[in-house]
Image (cartoon, rainbow, N blue to C red; front, side, top):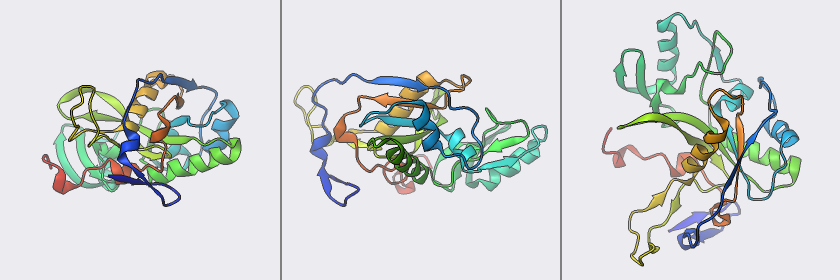
Length: 252
């Protein structure tokens, strides 16, 4: 199995096999401040952190949505107004329970309330998901390259629940410069047996690791994950690599 690089070349899946444990460093990025529509996230990030080649910069969906103007007014005391926005951001509603709606967004995400979020935003406003989070990640990555001269990857993260498990976790909704999924099929495990079904969602794992230093209420919307296997640094796309097509989904 091959992956497509930005220059059009291909890389065999064998280059993604893991040979030895790696040490990762996860760094919170402070000093970002409040983000407004039109703010250049790459410039803001580059001004407050020194990046190295191979770093993965994880940026929360919230500040991406704010910078891209994906904010809408809402009456927080009117459940009908909130439901109206959720339904406008959904292409299909899968389940309802009280105020909770599980729906499919136009991006193909299955998530609570179509990703409409009232946390960490000004009262009377709701944040919507970016129009195209992969494109957002590419834009930030290009800006960081221009500002710093460093070759880095970018992951746009958001908080999702998970079927059959309690608790929420941060996942990637967009990425650039990092393999979203590393395909280990055809390689060997530690006992020398062939792996036949193992595909690792690296982008989600990076997003989740970054959330451990960002938190939910500490005003740290950016983190840097350092030490990623260089073989994983390629074009990357959540939409193309992570989202499962409906005909492969046993639960829809």
